[in-house]
Amino acid sequence: MFVPGLYDVHAHLADSRLSAELPAILQRCADEMQAVLVNAARQPEWQKVLEIAQKPGMYAALGLHPFFLHEASDDWLAQLEKLVAAELQSGKLIAIGEIGLDCWDGRKQIEQQKNFLRLQLELAHKFSLPVILHNRRAWPDFFGLLKELRCSRLLGVCHHFNASRQIAKQALDLGLYISFCGPLTYTQSNRLRELAKYIPADRLLVETDCPDLPPQSQRGAQSRPWMVEEIMHCITELRRVSMSTLQEQIADNWQSLFGKQIRKVFTEIRKRK
Ligand SMILES: [Zn+2]
Image 1 (cartoon, protein in one colour):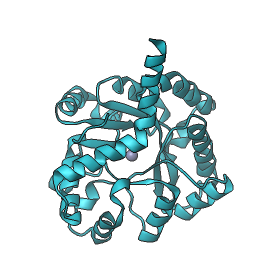
Image 2: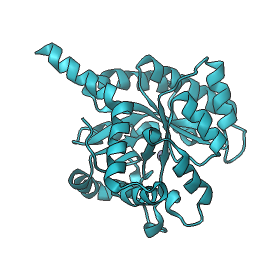
Image 3: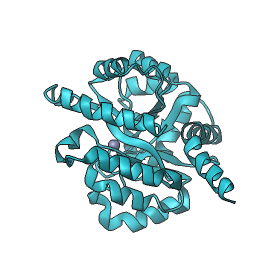
Image 4: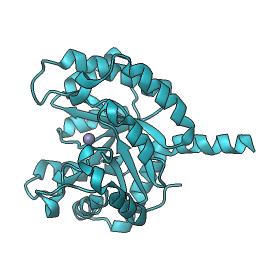
């Protein structure tokens, strides 16, 4: 179902900074890209994300990013579950995200963050959905939480992966995919570049985190989903593969990660006939 081309597994197209330009962005995505996974960061974005996902090639991930937990309503979990249950059969809601733990600013909120993450992981499990993970300076807490939950397999994506090779191995052992974005293309990103060579081809993904983390040629500006191409160019050089090989691999990886969600819809349609 997913054919070779450009895929962005992590873009925030519902971000209010993009409102004015959104129709033009969606048009260019439709012209140039195979698929974009639109990630929610905050509860007020959920409806907008679902609305954008109605477009061909657009998909939705709904969740709460660790930075925006304070603005969630008291009944956020019930709201999220209601939306997920209602949207699941559309084949457009294909993941729970962006969720995770962030200790960039210290560990003050870690227990609250772990609680929100646990509830969202349980929701993903309930609906058999992959997760889009944002973990920063919090990997030991993340692996510890999974252990508490007796979770030894997890389908999902480590977005903007930027940790050590040892942590990458732990994530891969769980079954997670590793996604690279703009910073990989910065000339000083030696550690990231080594990692991009190390990750097995069948676990590799690319993203822009649009409108943030622009690639080298756009530094100082905002990123856009089609800029995955620059990140892919960087990967083809690092791994010494052709662009068409990498495009095929990424389409295959989308298929093995999200294919089940899409297949479910087709089975439903067949059943109805
Ligand atoms: Zn993000």
